[in-house]
Length: 195
Image (cartoon, rainbow, N blue to C red; front, side, top):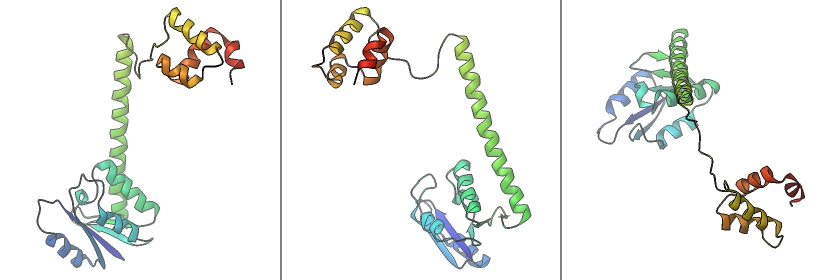
């Protein structure tokens, strides 16, 4: 069964061109949205994706009517492929139920993977350049108990069993993990005896 999905942005007025193309293609069921393509929640698309079954074909007028981005489009197409649902784009003449259509789909997927690899390489190169200049990536560690006086206060509060860990952390304004990390660095035996 051919299942059509039509979408226009809110500023566009009519779905007629797409609906006519679907009827000419032989679509038996058509779902539609009047939403911008960048909007994640598109009820018509959700209904269409829920409706199609194995060996059905989802038909769109153009690729940009389906996906918000190339990544989103490829995710949708991979999902359809996993469910054994074909895909057709009328304007671009892509039909994944044919060998040529499968080839075009794989080219798109390869381009997306290439783009991800380029982004990864640029990110790693940027981190390496930053490290070469003495900067470290990631979230900076909080130096909450970095002075001997603060660490001594933390130890004395911890040694007094009437203080709860939560109360100690609140008074020192540190997380439980930070408190234990600093206590562990100074006295391992205290930590082993801790509840």
